[in-house]
Image 1 (cartoon, rainbow, N blue to C red):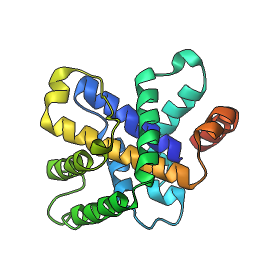
Image 2: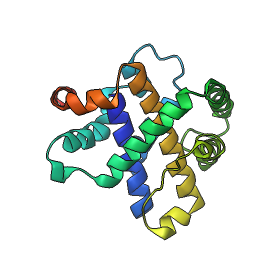
Image 3: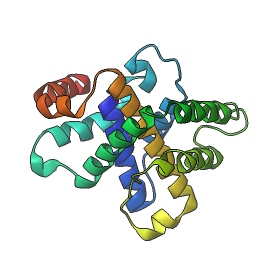
Image 4: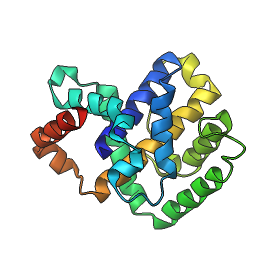
Length: 195
């Protein structure tokens, strides 16, 4: 499920970069994970399996035929995993991100989770923390969509949510090696969850 969370965030980043929009319910599901601080299970982080169905479908496709893989999405996933490992080595930055997320959450009575102001604050948080660590995630897409400030903020917010899923993936034992050598088990789990 955590890997599906990364795939959903990466796919939505790609959609916004190429078309200027993405399914708002799927975007909300990703962003909400940033504010589930003390979830007792992986499923609780996502609310339900239904909330990451899109991510499960994209992940399942990527595990299948090689030609079905989307190289841009794969690149975003690998970058999220790399940045999560760097972030994990910086507990002070992790604490700072959590505190700033709590500050953003405290404003939900004024601005909804999917308000432009919330995306702007999340985008700023990403820019001032994770983006400074490097390597930067280079988002490919259409210039007019990427130049739009609201889209740019939404993309950064989704990248932050993707890295949140990468944190969760590592916490439940996910590693690059396991992903490489247990593809069949991952695909079986994907198919079970999709059923």
